[in-house]
Image 1 (cartoon, protein in one colour):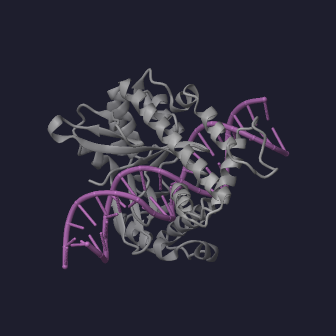
Image 2 (cartoon, protein in one colour):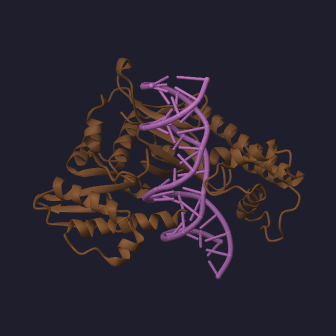
Image 3 (cartoon, protein in one colour):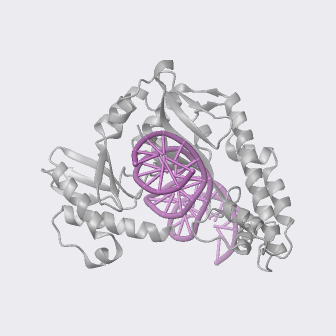
Length: 333
DNA sequence: GACTGGTCGCTGTACCACCT
DNA sequence: AGGTGGTACAGCGACCAGTC
């Protein structure tokens, strides 16, 4: 997955730039990408920016907003292109972003919290309960000792691509023909998933007790919605005066273009207009009693609105194993 | 050179509201 | 009650920079 999906997306982005410039489509890009989607987006850009002088692919540099840059005599518009089947993730953030950027005062970072409650030791104990790991799993002195063993458990369970590991474990446990080895793997996987969920709920209890910094919550929401997704991009602006940031976002000319992968339909959003639609009053992070995601909400009691949902989860392998991360979603209006 | 943590853009699916 | 369309969000592998 991963790299493979990115490759066609990038080819489609590059193709869009070529087509929007009126250049001949590059055969390699046509092969690698989705020319139909590139054409739909290029057509839309040409009609939205009739006086465009050029469309550039922003490349993979993370210091630029968006994927494509439309040049007009008045300046540049940064275009974030998303080729989506449905919904869509707005951003992925590092696991400790909310505490690092001071949305909470004196709260423990997620990574530190896990250490403090002994999550790694509990997880190791569970992984050790399985007999019969292959000889090449690494020694416990390596962090990847965990990844190797988790990978092996997934192999034993025969989890298919895209399949939820937990549901596969349940399937195995419900299958009368499953071997004792498979059952053992399923039991351990489920125990780790439970442990991880407990750990997240405990962390949310901790966050709920912490004071919040409304200015930082509001700043965070503005920058994320307007395309400043990476730690570096956030860093660059975070300490500026909030009113300056709002002015920056209004003048940024950042647009989000979504191309539906099935229909080729193109829709466009101006994120700074979305933000201008909220009453920025009593802005805070709302932390549910049960659930693994938090929300940024704003507005007076009669008109509370969700600005962002932020899910705490782990990438790679399954929950609790490899790469803790936060996924950000902008709820539909 | 091996390993790690952080970050990237994106997918799959359970669930829910709505319709018949 | 069953079907369906949309959404929330849990989850994916790859890449890369930093460290030792």
